[in-house]
Amino acid sequence: MRGKDVESGQWVYVLSPRAVLDDSFASLSLKRKLEAGRLSPDEAPEGVVVGRVAVAENETTQDALVAAAEAAAIWRTIPLSTRFDGWMELLRGVIDEHGDELVRLLTLEGHPLELAKWEISGMRELARKETAEYLRRQMWQEFSIDGRRNIVRRQADGVVCITPPANAPLVSALLGTMCIPGGNAAVVRAPRTAPYGVTYTLRNLIAPILEELGAPPGVLNIVCGHPGPMLDAWINSPLVDDILYFGDVPSGLKLERRCVEAGKKPILELAGNDVVLVWKDADLDRASDALVESFYGSGQLCMIPNQALAHPDIADDLIARVTEKAQALRTGYPDEEGVLLSPVLRHDKFNQFLSDAVERGATVVTGGHGVQIDGTRDSSGFFLEPTVLRIDGLHGARELDVVKHETFFPLLPVIVPEPADDEVLFDSFVDFVNSNMYGLRNSLWARDESVTDRFVAETVKGGLLKVNDSHIAFTAPLPSHGGTGLTGGVFGEANYPVLRTTHLQGVSIIADRSSRPSRKEERDANSR
Image 1 (cartoon, rainbow, N blue to C red):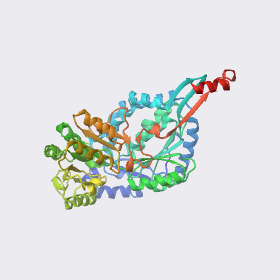
Image 2: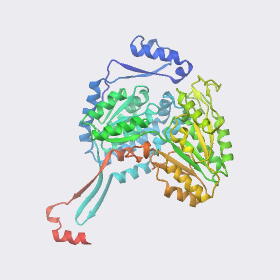
Image 3: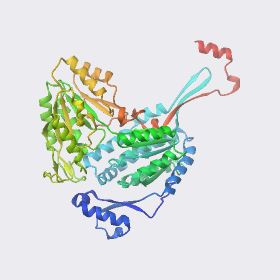
Image 4: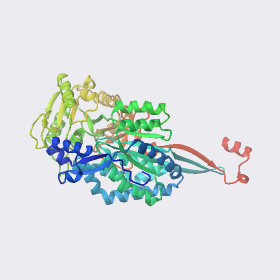
């Protein structure tokens, strides 16, 4: 904060995921002793403690807002050539130079190695020149009209507070800092449950970018603390302009209402319940690869496929391919090559969703059990088997909880509609997507261009649509986040933080009074 470290005397200790998976009880006991001060870090077993982060006191939380407001007043006046162009160039260099380090930090958060590489690929796409060029055009456009210099620009909102989710704090915090090149100052909450990656990355990799650009201290502030009290402080502070919130739908929508009442802009990244449509002429091998992405991170990602809608002609073949590939996925430590599954701490909702689906007629094709890290079936294991469900009949499918809501575990329902004329069938496919309460990503697999054209033209739900591509792949200059419905709240849309945390402003400049058009000239110009 203000370019300096602030200690509070209270620490959150972060332990190695390997240690937690090997002996969760001993790890939890060690963590409690360390944080209570009954044990010093030097007394901990070697290699178990990853690091520690100071917990912010109330005074520090408030001071961070003051520092951000003071810095924002200066930073927003810095030319775009410095604060935007310079930022994007330096960010590209940081990601290229420190990509392996960022991947390692993500594995320390418990992200499987392959998943961590995918996440950093998203940051690379965000920093690409093509993305920078697109965003730069949105930030400032200038026209010469009737002796006037007319500008349409995006002006910074001011102080942006960011609270990333516990399941993906590092990359979400990095995404949030993209509000800074828009001229804003950021206050980032490092979650108490996983603060190390956020704090280390922003302090050691992002803060030096700002220092090189000559940004005033206070443009970036990192505070670790509980979400409730910190969100209350942000909403109650007259210094805060925007709040970027990652989390569950009920909490996010409640926060949205509070923000609007307090005159602040809510920017929400909530749950996803993405649909993949597979038409009768689809490349089934590639389509099944995309559906298996449903199990990445054991389904604990908002932007993975949550359900598939398969044309009846190819449903059996598609389900067989998905099943074979799902069964090949393996458990393991997050830093091991080839591991894509993550621990799932609570299995109760998985079992509830699975039981509800089976009771309503769904068939378990594969999976359905808890497993140990070595793959042995065990209801008390940390992991869950990738589970594929078959649901026959489109009518009533949305009544099943596993279809209606985001699941957030490795459970993929494949819905097979009743046979019908293709025209009627495709209408029902698009209606199904557009009637989804959520709207993050949706995708289609089809070779017929008339089908893909209709999908693109008629699908209104979602911040991102994909056709014949990996559902989760990042590609510049398209946004990585953002959506409609329950995913983004009332103001939801594709999310480029540099645009969402700024507002449109028009500017008209006449160089000197002698060149000002007469009223008659203005009337004549307006009548043309």
